[in-house]
Image: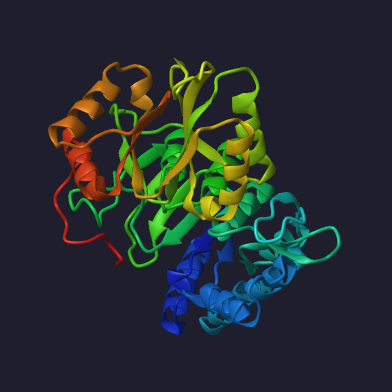
Length: 420
């Protein structure tokens, strides 16, 4: 008898019929003799609807009240799922974040889990019930409702699986698993049967939307096997675990991210402390920085200028850039930059694979493929298992397809990804 945590996302909960289907999946697992805990997201589009209502009433609504509002979507879903299971002959009980309880910090709209008391859920499943837990939400020390940020139900599911010592955490979504790249961009993309936590973490951080990055971090930390599956198919999905495919290829997948913008500080003073000043200012604004490039210093930038100067380039999320442009301009003045330039018409494309650790030439091959398609590289960053390039957004789809084909990742061409 295994303990199975099953998470159903918004598309799986999008209508009464889909909720019945999800309930049937949970019941089938329970009837096989397993103990089952179900985590649910809000119905598709519900959270966006609630947030739009709030912004009709206030330009900048209180973060605390936004969490109290947004969490109601999962409250509805958890009750409906429990009702659907009961209607199909099962025994079920729903739990909200504060009933479980899922204790978080008080960073409203992006709270982090501090502890989980799984006593009540454990009691329910031991008594033969299917426990249904509202994802995405928790409660802080003051008793205020908090939410875990976009995609937070994935994190809820993995955290609860870790707290319960579950044998597997199944993430049901609208695709059949993790693909070698986005099938909407590259029809020859194929499903990956098994992928390591490290590779999945890189893909999630580089733009793959299948799993929230925090959920992968938590799964890796606590060793929770995650099975990404389709709600609309009985086929096996992708298993995310410590080891990837035993027949490890050099490159596992290609990812892209259109959500970044480039910032260029032109001609800052090339002296100790200047770069630290730039990135300290960004850290104080809670802005995460991705690619960072500092050019070789030059003697002056204008007639009569004898100061050693250099250019500093980095990328940030577009949403963060809009919020902190004034702060960036101020730090530019403080560091003596001759100019500060912005470019949000860019995309980051990346290749990822554990096999890169023991195979040379991946970066060279990536650069060669892009060059053969006349795609200029604006910036580069690497790690042990990934290479990322910043390119013009107009070349995004061409670059993804070229890299996918160039590294021979494709399978049979399909018209569209399963479940869409």
